[in-house]
Length: 238
Image (cartoon, rainbow, N blue to C red; front, side, top):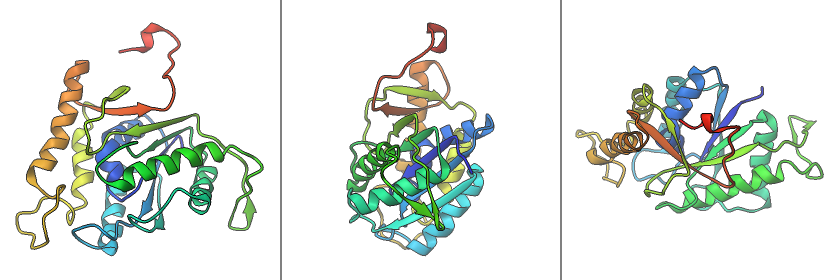
């Protein structure tokens, strides 16, 4: 299966939090979108890896993505080395996405920055034909995505461009709430965490509102780039 967009997160819920509304919008436009989680989030303060597995599956159904895979790298301890890069390369070559969305380049959780660089490096290396990989006993062809964009997470990083996601914020929030063990629940007996407060969920919507305000839309999501964003003409800008 070929995907138009592959969204990658260090942990289950990273993609939903960072670019869930953009994914929902692209799918509504007929794009084929998949999600890759690098870890199972087993070191998360609340819940467990098994709970996260179920929650991520539910979130994928809400967003209506084509596929969701998990590489089960070690949460917090995975590194950007040859072995990890090769596993990501296999996924890129398997689905041949034109666009890859991945973690913020710098963030509060160390896995976000690591995951960002790992995926970015793998996207480049995936295009080198002398790097040989195989899946299910079949040799894979080299493939390099056209674009790698980084969604914004905990830190308020200045975006290089924003996507108007008016009309899709509710789908994003619904997908986020699929991770019931991770976020605010007044009846939960689990320890609290920075993302388990009521104000955190409110901040997700507030950020989207604020970015939307800046472009004259109801809601927007921001991304950073690795190279200049090009347009055919000035009418491409909204």
